[in-house]
Image (cartoon, rainbow, N blue to C red; front, side, top):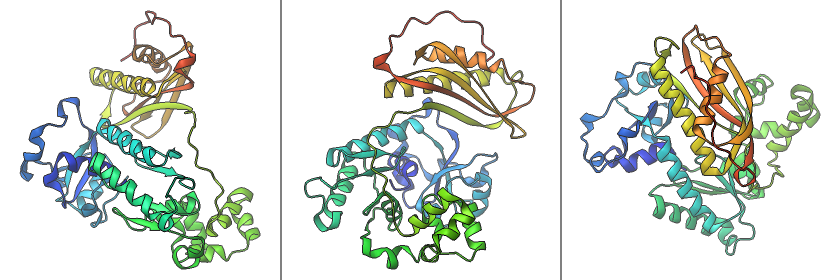
Length: 380
């Protein structure tokens, strides 16, 4: 999907189209839900990035904002220096999930062999979809784009290739609303001139090591001896680097995969203290437990292992977990068990992050849920 979170917000605020807009900083509260008046708000009513004070990060940005060098995962304070006039909107994950489910429903209606890769991305295999090979896949890709636009008002970019590795790269070639098709014979002309970082799986550290070896482009990587790459990067990763440079990828599109766990976490706008900010932490803690429970219920899972994650003001992180007798998807049960985990960590320092996790999942259909029993008092 093209600038997914930002594009959803532009449906709510069409008056912001074409302007630099960044999403991040805090979550939208239920009281700030969409209303008919949103589309009539004057530009003067929106918060500007120059006024931001805090340590939040950008979740995503419109293409107009990206032109200033602003991008996802960048600190908002840094972004404010690059584009002070950008409009800052809070995140609304509930809305993004609704649109995510909607666009994926459209994709499945065209090509049911779909692998879910997160809130805004999927892989599909349309080898055997009727008409899927017309114009190298372009006809079906256009139908999918049109279907998503009609159902959601959102645009997407599609990469078509013989495998997932190349399709992922191709999907970035012509954003927004692009369709890029890569054939096996296109490797030398369209893939090899690109920097190594364009391969999904090569991060900044690996790229720095490659550059230190004089390897800057995918083509230069492809010309390296496989044995030399293994010596520098290890047996598995070195072999993968060589295969990736040659566009080789045998991974199948996986339509079904059981989740290992589900979690929610939040980073606070300011450090919070377990005593002085007890009420605020309690509200946040309850909301996290409720969101995890809602995720479990929506996806049809229950879990037995419930844990917490804390990050202190000095960036040290701790986790605790416990396993309960019966799998659950009940928010009160999750909160009670997570509260017991909180009792096992030091809470004398201020906190910058709090998270709740439920693991050891089983399908709800395999569980006979018992009534929730009364528990002990909780810390928050």
